[in-house]
Image (cartoon, rainbow, N blue to C red; front, side, top):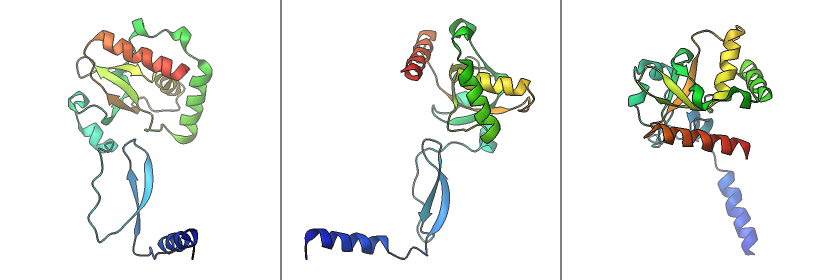
Length: 178
């Protein structure tokens, strides 16, 4: 019997194992994507990395700025603002904004694409990246397609200075345009 045939038999045996004792479970992976996995209910759950907080937990947290970076929060759109000195509206691609709007109307806002923000006082959040998404949501609110108190997913990051924040915005623009 050749090596390939032995390998095929072993793989076949592994693939044909009875999995009726396993249960399907939906998890949220490290990147915030929902994923269906098979788990053994008789074993303890695997330790997972940090998961995005469900909306109920995120809204219960009064100060997302105290949370570690990369934690997902849902913040009312009224608490988010653009810093005009860093945001040139003439550079916005309206086709991109319209595409995002169509996607949000058809599928809802995908929390896998949060805005990156920083906070100056804990009550307002300044957009670092995600200006097109923010603009799309604002336009949908004006059109009456989203509620006035829409909560948008954000990741709060801390920057050492305004120069660091500006460098992060420039890096995002370069990444998007490449």
